[in-house]
Image (cartoon, rainbow, N blue to C red; front, side, top):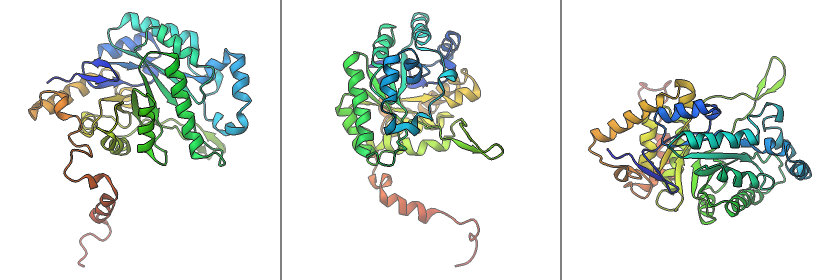
Length: 338
């Protein structure tokens, strides 16, 4: 079985990528991910706050606009508790590129296009194969228009694309009012890949201490439904590569994403739960499932169950909503004669 795939111009031996997580915070962790079979590694994110900590000019720029999105800043990690600083991050990329034979993808996590453009350049100079833009923005300002939220994505994409020659992926939010159109416009604006979707870590409330609890939970396999839908809808309709990044815990989710049209799948929670060695299990199970059904390459598989290839495209639209409701069996009334 030929599992090779192309992800925004990167030739990968199979579609399973180790996504951004604490596992890539050390060179030892990165080498273990490669040894376990990762076809590429997305580095943990370099946060905007870490950059502005070392850049007073950008600090002023960011704070001068807080009247527009002040509350959203509270959802970022505190500067003192964030991960490695920019120089440590760049040094780790250099070491990872030198020590591995797979693509290393840098990750920038921010909300504005100023200040960290230089770091996109430095990530390129450090030898990264691509950059993923993880635009973590929660528009809590109720006066902010949807068009202003969308425009921020385009401004950041343009700024980074103008600064580097590397492929650039955008990790999208699932909360746009017109997700398909947003994807189409980002594709037209030059995004080399769309990662579906960003997983916002929403706060909980600590009832004992009456405090906001910034709880982090691993994903569940049930979370694949939303990105599965949009990958199936977008497949064949945009040029950008499609990456699935939610709820992957077994080969079952991987195969479903490939059938929907994903070029790659990105795994993090399953590796955090089972260890990096679990990558080899995912690769083998995916290969076995496809081989048992006489597939010879991913070209035969990818998009076979996308919206453009299924017999009933309505399964992805409103008509399916009615079918789902009609198929639901009430456990309290089942067995009662009508």
